[in-house]
Amino acid sequence: MVDACGTFSHHKREAGLARLTTLGIEVSDYATMIVEIMADNADPKANDIYAALDMPFATLMGQVAASLSQ
Image (cartoon, rainbow, N blue to C red; front, side, top):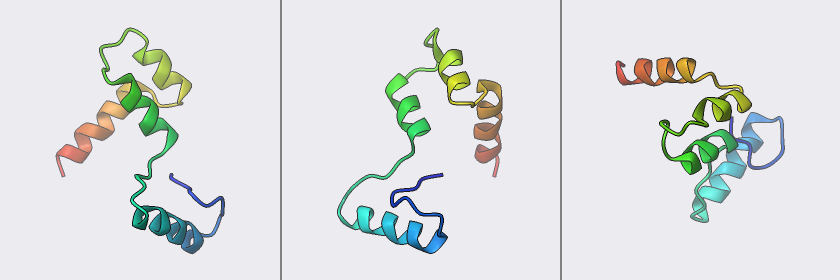
């Protein structure tokens, strides 16, 4: 989940994200940014990184495969 405005309100969260997007700011979440910085899942440390993010690699790949089949 991305939260750019520090609120628990869905509407305030969406408004905060819209403001940032309108300003040309690319909004992302910490997990996506770390994976993008890693750049390659062949990196020997990939499993450790995914584990630290509480994202088991096999689960992540299953989610990717499922999204591609939709």
